[in-house]
Image (cartoon, rainbow, N blue to C red; front, side, top):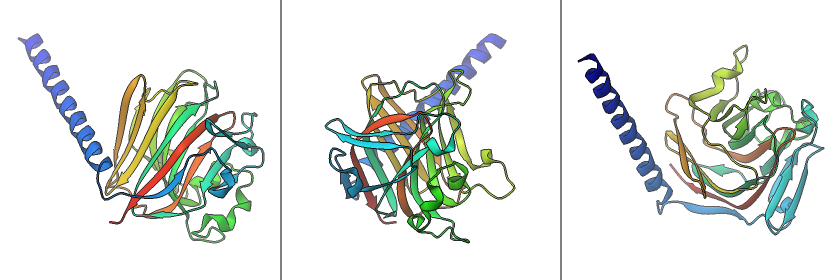
Length: 265
């Protein structure tokens, strides 16, 4: 009898989780296909990148090719000067949908790619809400300069732990880190551990949507689709700002057909 109860419980649990996943997928599809979105940014990423983007990091390189915008952080691990961030020159308000094609070109088994969503400065001391007013401060783009001094949503993807032990993940965070609090408290649950692996050299289509109190991140490739979702109802709202592409040292990728859609609340 006990075995039957355990089996029944597992069946019900799997059914509930399966239904929840289907509901999230349907919600994402409905929001993504909404006619309310307005295309406000469209970069094929094959022409001069400096028209639409600005770079934090003196060591990084950005090259436009027929395949897209090849963005490479510096080659030295553990050297903050070799981090890099590309920022849109434009700022975006309201709900937002971000889409782009992505090819990972590094073979690293450490460190992280990040998508920064609607970034502004915290508005205190020299950290003006317009982050371009203190870009010189970020010429050496150490991570803490961002998570201590910016308001934004962050998604880690093509992301590995720092130990090179094969651990990978997809994760969301809300900046800034509160003073005297641990960085881990910026995390928005859940963390998708060992989910969202991105192969070197394979093309992926990525869609990130912030809509109301939900954050979605979808990865599509020849291997199939993965959808990640986070409830934003318990974190402070992010309403406007620039989009950033961060690559930690040693990481490099090609971006193409970068599009941003917005709709007002």
